[in-house]
Length: 200
Image (cartoon, rainbow, N blue to C red):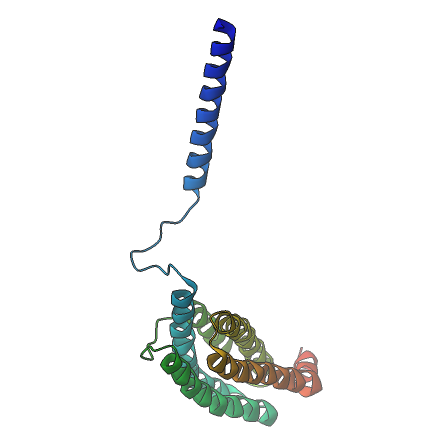
């Protein structure tokens, strides 16, 4: 009887210790959420919309600067074409906000701010001409890849939430971003990269 009781006590203590250790380990690396943190997919979706809305608006200022610093006619045309697309994408996002029953609101996108800053750094670190053009393409494609990932995620969120019209609008923008990325690749592969290599 005594032995059985001791075994039970030992097991209970071990279990309690294990649970305590698990709780401590879990808390150690976990970030505490803000008071207004998203608690459901709808809120996460809306936060994502605010983020990319800011990003697209910031791009309408960044793209003209890139175009002014480019020398390749094909690159300038690709940047200007995407500026027109970006303006349309902003309008499309405003429609998505409306479908979600929300006012179109921008929230600073740290990722896009960093990518634009990196692009500005490339302008300062390259000579005017084909080498700078190659740098501009690299910077812009990083931006496109970020946007492709973002719009792909938001479209999937919209589908999951049963917002088929919003998903369709986001799909249109996703395809435009893929097209812009492809256009930049064509400019790089057909001319700019080779000319930049010869400039060494």
